[in-house]
Length: 173
Image (cartoon, rainbow, N blue to C red):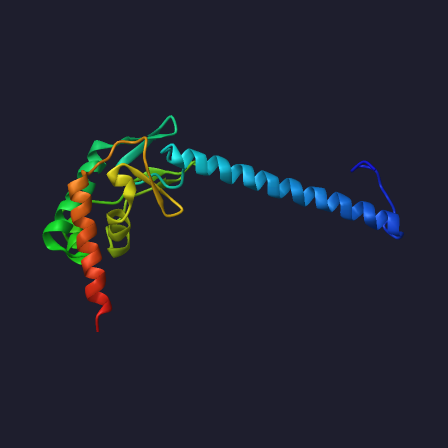
């Protein structure tokens, strides 16, 4: 039976043929999904950035993250301010007081997106993103990235220690 050939589903042979074709279609979908996931996993293990919104501090060139020095200064100021104040709220207020903005970018559709003011959410996201330390996080595993780090290991570790200690303080009544 060819896919384009019509067959009668009123009898048992027609229903069997329909189920066989549906089973093969499902098999093909699952096989394609597995191949895509395996390729994604392998690329992450090699340290490749696999897409999504381009993070502030980086630009995309030839499918690779390249440091945008103007935005990288904002990231360095953010980490430095957080380490000095140990407060996400004080950090985003300081960034906004300095007139700094989040990433300005143009969507693939051509729609421009202006950078906005910093808030708790995007400051926390930046502080916990291993990308700025030159790593790739995939399914909870950390791999060395092919991109250059914006901040050094010492700065990263200080910020993570502060965040970890703050979370402990918050959970104690």
